[in-house]
Length: 444
Image (cartoon, rainbow, N blue to C red; front, side):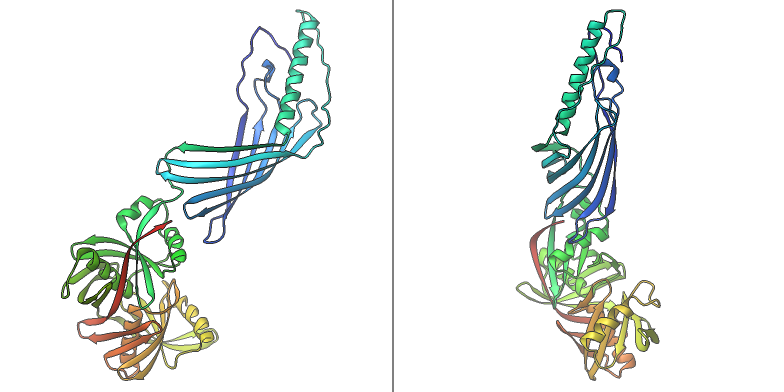
């Protein structure tokens, strides 16, 4: 070791680390990750500064977003080298917790508590006396070495003692994926089959998240069967449907009527007006028939059914005969006496995800009680049991008329209520009530 001149300069320690995500955040489960880092020896130690040690750190991380606050905790171990004895190390437990609340897309308030606890007894560190003959005299060089050793011992004691830090600060930066985004959400339902509605202009501000993640964050907390992204037009709208599990759907009959109710409410439509909605399954029209407070009655036209056929499906060790068709989305209708709860909960998901339906299917169990009356149970693709379904009721009416002896105009009774379905040469139509409530705020 040498030291020359009357002044010294130095560079900070270099810390290199990485974080690995082990599990993503779920609806009730926090995200988990692992962080490890190493501090390289100070390259400028010859000048008399730094500890000239290599340290290692490893931590387990957990993070959870609750409403609009992001909470992160960590617990780990640090292995610190001893600058005064190459054969020793100092192990410390590291810990911390922080929260972050975005106040704009460019700023967030952050509070944190972190610290470390020494695992080594606090005995005195060894003292080393080092001397080297130099041309400018041993006394000066010995004093410089002793001073550096005392500094190294003091810094080692300071970094390994039990410390706790508390900080509350404002952090200004761009947030490519904000901690929280507040969306204006309308909620509407038809016979308990309810949906959340988000204007696509508001959703674009949340575009960094996938549709699946956005739907998964919104719907469970709000008790909805799906999320509908819409863009209002004059007496109409466009719609894109996401199921409760985040998967896309071509069409929702009840969602279609609820969106029409939202259009009618916002644009102050009157009885007799027609709402046009552009969907993945094509253009659908709805005629406003009655208004009672927040209740809107529409007659919805779905167009003609397609690919109606009867098939035998091997499932769960038996063969089930079903009517398969499309009413804008895939449907599988099992005609016969309604199953009990156990059989329904087994057959419903098994048929919905059966290999003969590559994109999955909605499943209805339909019992023709009379020529003009059909009773159904519904297992909806991407949702599970539902109280009502506009397309499911329509598919059940078509299957009952085609293969079950029912008339082409029937009342379809679901657990949530009854819908009148008509199957005519120009297509299927159905009507009943849809209720819309607007003005709720939802954080995602």
